Image (tube, rainbow, N blue to C red; front, side, top):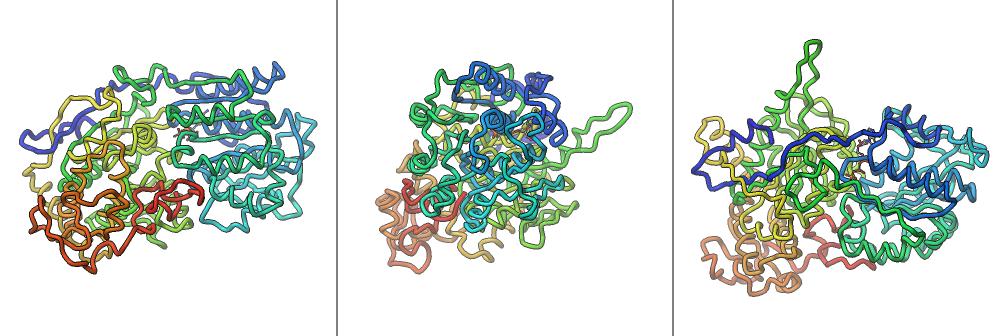
Length: 640
Ligand SMILES: Nc1ncnc2c1ncn2[C@@H]1O[C@H](COP(=O)(O)OP(=O)(O)OP(=O)(O)O)[C@@H](O)[C@H]1O
């Protein structure tokens, strides 16, 4: 954390406590230590000219060495790869897969590389990276491929199936344009014989394979299958969908299979690996246990160069605290500008990601922040242009239309000229590579330690600097039990919550007013309460007795509601929250009720009207599950 920020947190009387992780800040010494690009000459040219990279990251070096080793031995070997966030895994698997296909071409018109992605945003990003890499004539040195004509298709939910089917069937060449626009060449320009890549989220791909014969045909000769963010694919409940897709492509013995992630500890990984990584001995590559691992931590997944702070504060402080955190970061980051005798580097623009546990919570905080002076919404349609004089807020979660999600994501990525905050959910937690994010704030406990690692990994990428803050209510501290003790340290620093500084008092007042305005102006603020209950009841270490009272405080102190929203009996049963203190079933108890014995009321028109039916998804694991997935009732809507 920035020293000035740490200092500003000092106030002994405050109920808010900030615990600093016991992490030593060190430079990431292993970034780019491999000066040569061990790719084939054409890919090397692409990496240099299309990406400007002259060196390989450690994971890229090890993966390509493994591929060369297998090629030299004339033996197919599968790969299980773990490397920290932001260390270049995407290009590692893309370059490796393309090299393998170049050496062993089969049908010129079939899909040869299939990448599984857990989220739509990641699928689109990976496809763009593949297009950039393939924007080169790969075949001058390879007689098997006489022509240049590669095709990358994204298959994700929420978008036109027709276009995806068309894309996968017709090998229309997609041309990369450095301004980040991809234009299709005309039919006449499309040439077969290139490499065809499909990047897919499992749900939509299964759907197309089951219903569209030509899609099935085009995937029957896949040569390389990649499970990116493999642990998340499985944890999201995609097992059965993936199994169904695998029936349509060559058996594991007849293809290469790679599994990649920054975290591979999930037990389901071993199960999938045992059936899919059959070309042995498997290359097990793990670059996490290096000099950048924080001293004293039990995990090797975290970067030492990202200082991380754990803040314990009651819900009632959250809106003010988050606002203050953002403002302090925005004000202090430019002071980090380094001045040399010859030049002054341009101050980096503060770029913040605020992770919320539910879409409703993200919508709430986004609406609250945009009502504050000097903040503004940059995600309404037509307002995507940033305003340099303001802190621009971008709202992105699973309850937005896919086209809007794509626009917001592109706009946040492109904004390098003004301070910006992406208020989002776990749809943005994995793999997504927004450049130069300077601060990640996690609002509430992540669903697992792995998720913590991935969220904080949106900053400090490619060896750059960044910092992380985790904000939890005392009730939520219980959810932290599964997390690494070495990471959550015990050094206590105090807070600014009780500050009497007139500027702070004015800010607090405007935050409180913004909160009241949101309740008055925005419909369905109480849905945020239901969504929080949904999130809580899914947590491993949930203390059921405490859920009701904690959520009641959330509704009263953070959402500023006058009464606890009421649940239908069916919903309360689904969540296992009947006879739980603080939970109002079929009636709305007001806060004048004793929290210990809420008065049951007659069914109120307010609040839940009989079951989630996707209305109050608990978090953004909601979408993208196939009908065969093990989705809970409140997880069935939307998509990641
Ligand atoms: N050889 C390289 N030299 C310099 N930068 C690189 C190199 N390879 C990748 N990068 C950049 O590093 C950043 C992180 O890469 P990438 O998104 O592949 O990380 P990752 O390991 O997949 O992270 P995550 O675990 O979060 O998915 C990207 O901006 C990428 O362009």
